Amino acid sequence: MSSSSESEMASEHEESADEETQAEIRQDLKTMSFEEIMKLKEELGAKVYKEAVLGVKSAKTKKSKTDLKRLNKNRPREMSAKKQVPFLGAELRIERKNQSQQRDPRFDEKSGDYNIETFKKNYRFVTKIRNREVNHLKKKLDEVEDNNEKQEIKHTMQRLINKNVEEKKWHQKQYTLKKERAEIQMAHNEGKQPQYLTKKERRAKELVHQFEQLKRDGKLNKHLEKRRKKNAAKDRKRIAIE
Image: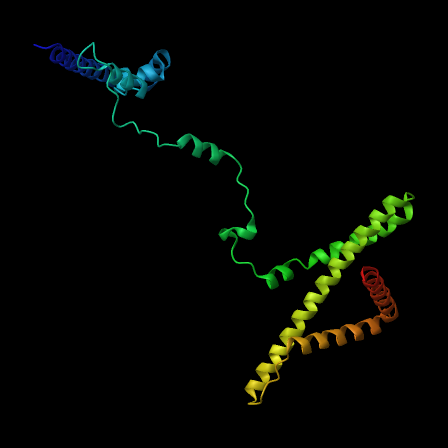
């Protein structure tokens, strides 16, 4: 008889003996009260109680017996085929998963499509924040004495003002385009020939609207003076190059 068959017979004999012992223990437990059973569990411990009384063996014990099983003592131990083999690069994937992933919403499909009109509408409150910041910088400008710091504050103020002006122009342009589309649609509904404006004609209308707006606000003279200085600087630069 080979050593492997002998070991199998011995293990089967041990298992049958353990089952008989557990059956006897369970029979004795039937005659015991609940308090006596709980006291026995406290004395033995939960782990020993489960193994001795209930026949539940821990995964560690089962694993140790499986690891020790081999056909020949001179052969290496057999590893269980149930154990999952890690994929190549699994450690790198785990490391990348633990790291914080930064993404740019402008180029991420999860953020949806970019709609400039919706974006501008949702962030119109930024204009009010810039106005408050400009007022704060004006007060700070009166308190500062250093010329370099004053120039820096003025530059920041002008940058914020220019952003608000550009935002206002964009919204005004969108309003004009919507009004133009509405007039075209109305002409279609009435059976008339709609008037389509060219880029040049639309630009001329925008300049007229800007001129009228500056005139109403009393800023026309200041604007014209600024334009004259800008054109004069361009002329001087062109003459110097020639």
